[in-house]
Amino acid sequence: MDKHLIALDLDGTLLKDNKTISERTYNVIQKAKQAGHIVAIATGRPYRASKMYYEQLELTTPIVNFNGAFVHHPRDDSWGMYHTPLQLETVKEIIDVSRKYNVRNILAEVMDDVYFHEHDEQLLDLFNLGDPNVYVGNLHNILQKNPTSILILSDEQNVSRIRTYLSEVHANVIDHRSWTAPWHVIEIVRTGVHKAFGLEKLASFYGIPRERVIAFGDEDNDIEMLKWAGIGVAMGNAIEPLKAVADDVTKTNEEDGIAMYLQSLLKL
Picture 1 (cartoon, rainbow, N blue to C red):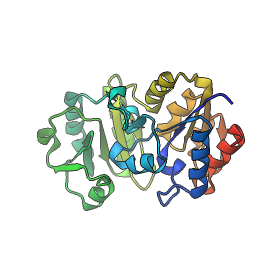
Picture 2: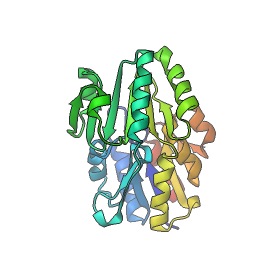
Picture 3: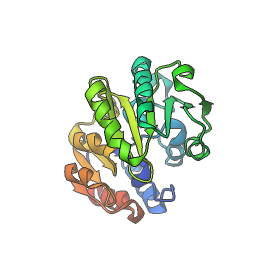
Picture 4: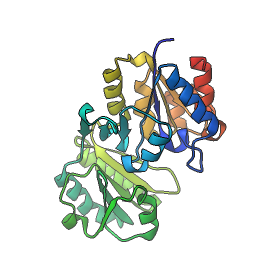
């Protein structure tokens, strides 16, 4: 069988709800690798919060982090590093305007440094995975580098208002999306940056055409990746807009959806 590139989102896709990889899914992924297929992770998480799964699967491939804003090869520095951050000037404008909407908090991530506008124990626990350097203070003052991404935490009723502002004023330089409940979060990255941006680099490196790229996902940050891949597969637990653009739908992340699909398609 021809070699395929298999791209795996993490949360809600590869990972069960308890943030573990099932034994069946692990075993099928190993069989796919042994059969000569290329397996890679494409996630919105930073590398520090996805490294444990990369190592558990014993991957030797580049990894797509921050939804494509950071792509690198953990085992080969010579492969190159692609970091596409936001412009600091634009970010500070957004920070200033966001105050008008009484946002709960604003976070900025610069690779493995995390900046909090306000101290928040719950959020500190959520973003502390991988032991990042954490700074708390007025972002307009303490943020001195172009951030990889920023997150705006808001009340539910203000999310659409903030996103309307972002689209009207900054559409030419940023892309934004919102998280699903219980977090009312707007995630902002540089325009044109998404998982497909990173996945295309991997496919080119391995010489694999789009029609032999299989991508799995469950949320709206997977839409571009599933549309770009030759075979875009939505999980059974995926949001409806993703299922609408997917080529196929498999079982949920709790039902070994990835394992079932790969076993059938690749005859593993």
